[in-house]
Length: 209
Length: 99
Image (cartoon, rainbow over all chains, first blue to last red; front, side, top):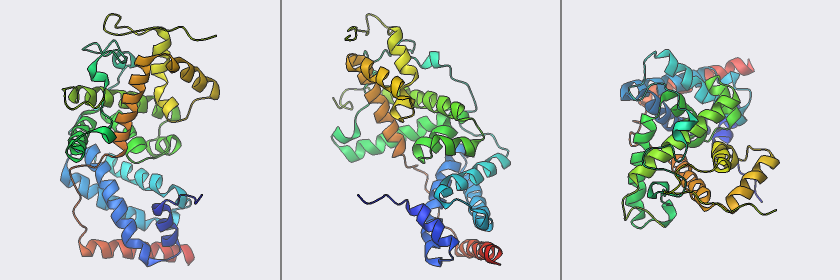
């Protein structure tokens, strides 16, 4: 079976070797990803674009310091996260807040959200939905809003782990957190998103069973 | 020993302790970050617990949606001058590396 090769890792290796053909795909891929992260963290378009451009400039200025191209994505996001902090602006979305596991537990949520007991447990499987494209776009839109309303300390972890696909170790390094804290915030952030999405998708006709 | 079958739903809104133990570890379970013993414990529980299966499935679907999230806010193309600035920075960095 052919081994999966991450294109970003390949582009980073080629850039380290001086291959200019890798420049454009690398820039376009990371500009888009970094902007999505900075937009979701800052909530202001101008700030997000400025931070994304500053990040890319810093990435290329310090490209000679990229020791492990296999971890280029975590390296880039570490720089992006530092520029976000340097902006010293609070997110216009939800600020930091601690969720207790208790408040996210089934049966202790409003509306009797006991596992399997309520329609609100049923988040539709996107593969099974009719009018798939429209509903997928609707779910995507609702998820983006839910993500923005997630307290920033959870949002940053969910964005790096689930949206960008970094490992627990990489996310911990990017955010200067222990792996245990990353795991805890990821779980609570996911539960909060699931709760939010489930409520939105409850009405009949949207639930694929 | 087969697990004891149980129910929890609208009539019994608080899930049994065994379900709450599973609930606490679901992300690590789905991410393959649990020890083989903890993983087996969860699998054994959810084999006979339909509400927990439904909860796991809804969480999986929600996580999958996050993995496919694409922001409505799209980035504008970089101006040519900025691209040239980035390229010059890359070339200078490579020179430092090889020089």
